[in-house]
View 1 (cartoon, rainbow, N blue to C red):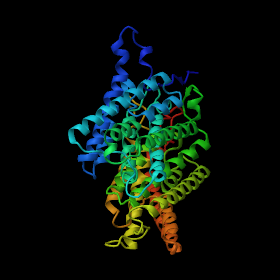
View 2: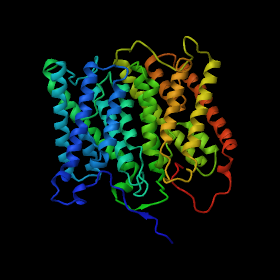
View 3: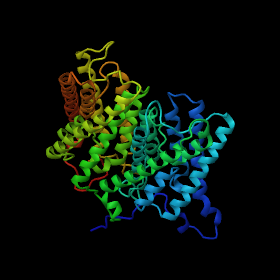
View 4: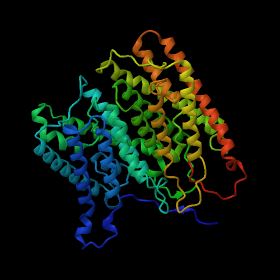
Length: 498
């Protein structure tokens, strides 16, 4: 029998071990790369804060992070964030000597960028909670989204199952950068959406005295370090074999408990992102939600399939081909709905103390052009689209090509939320997901103190429409992809998101 054990992939591995020790410049290369990449990131964040467009600031920062990681990733691993380096150290993905060196260079790059932008504009972008939010409110979202960044880095850029040595993925930087889109719009008006100690130090120390005497950079850094620990913990819980350094054996068969936790985490971050965008009246709810979905699918698609949506799970179960059994699908749906309810409850706190606490939000037809007939058509059609795309790009065998992986799958799925959210947001809100509906119903029922029955009745109708969309997607998929149901050869690719 052929040996199916592959060598573990070490993203950003010790370059010193591969190059002559006397070549000092080569030894310094990863540290210089971290300095330069972090400098570009912090300078962009600073200029966006004092001169940027609020509509596009988060996208601009996400873009500079993405391109910087692609540029220096092969040299240093593209951490560009002390929290990421700490998470890599905690999980054994980077030696602590390198972690410390990276942190020093990252903070140095952040300080230089902060001094440069402040000297150029003479305006401060000091780090501080926004509106009437305090330490607890700002700190909680900083922990959550810093943990998300670290979690995505560990899953997409360091996981040996996501990066077999002979077929490494090319989506890692896209997934990492777009966490900033997800969190930037969701909590930019709560904490400033920093998620990076180098940004906290680089921006706040240069201009804090002109805004506040409180050393917020220190408080934010503490929260971001906690976020690194949380992200590393959940990475190990979802992929325990990574910490045990088990050999890479395909096909990858994670345990059910890891799959359920993965579905919970992915759905929780999606619903949290949607809810925070809504209660803070973000100008880009669909864009942020799509980014959250994309990042978590790229991170956990090979563990659980990356459904994060009961309608999608129903479509995958009905599509057959042993992609998801009925009992597994039932467990998935339960965990997705529970995650939605918990996330909705958390969002309630931000709604109750935020600047728009007098403005309710709930599942109902849009005030201007929405009707229940429109809600039925909109939610059914666009949930069908989302579920059908999942079936087509994430559960099918990739074509014969130099790579066995399908790198565009999560981008395609996330783009469905972008399309649907912007297209029908004014009609139905563009939920496209029963877990999102349950999260919004939970928040509405807690916030309103009355009319609870109406919140949940609407939620049930939305969920029903969305499940119909998943059912139709499975039917159409069977017609359009009949070849997927033909007899498969004994040996086939196992790298799809089954």
